[in-house]
Length: 338
Ligand code: CIZ
Image (tube, rainbow, N blue to C red; front, side, top):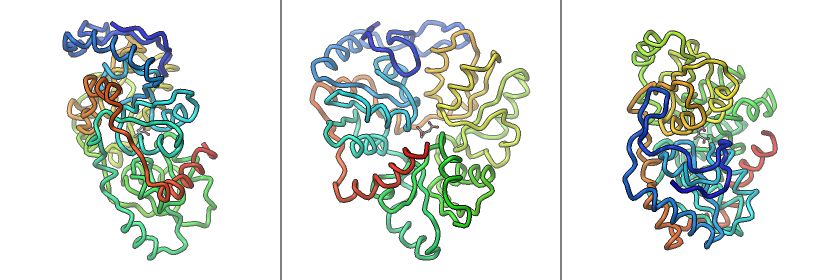
């Protein structure tokens, strides 16, 4: 397995296990195709030649996480994109995340392995809908989840991630009503946490909606000692939120587990995160809340496509400068607050 000498964001030097061996926590990772070891080595060499850094989202397939210089959530990846000296950023995540990196780092080349790696949730709102909604609430402050296109962000006042949503909302003057797009469940969670007047758009993430309350109930009965960690995008949030030990973003889950003496966890989010958790904590058991919580957009990026991306220097992600100028305002406000 390739070792590239960089320490990635999860505190491990790359080269850890995703080769199909039992990982000590009761789960056997899916066997990687035999050519992956060679591909990983080639990616490491190519990355140096291209002066590239590989940023991978927590939901990416394990093999991509293994070759990444940094694995994290969209906020962490945006900050790493800003901080890197690399000329090229191979962004292994979905399109809106690569757009954010491209806007924050206009002097760098941002590549995505598959241009079709989009986001069903982000597609549930378009700029015209924001304009119409805003016209109905002229004093409202429009807050968008990071899972939105740059064109939508350009129509918004603040951006949030699931890590910093509460902090950003609390920063907005208390007399202002808030229009939150596009995730209904994250918005409901923020409304409950902050007690603010928040109007909710009715978008949702299909991967999180695949996590059903009945499955969670069954798992909690089977693993009574396990901590139950739930992402606020979960469709079952409204029914189950009070049952969760914690409602957390992916980074929040990683940090909670790093600190927790507990040995078992039920994880209600996209299942790509389990690779990072099992790699960092082979001594702990992680149970996915649903085997079906898989984002088909995230899975469009594969190790082969990541390799080809560096070979061909494709697909370059750019944002129209006029849109970028406006979209950076809510993003920068968020980065300044949290
Ligand atoms: O902000 C992110 O990266 C997303 C989409 C989820 C999370 O909780 O990390």
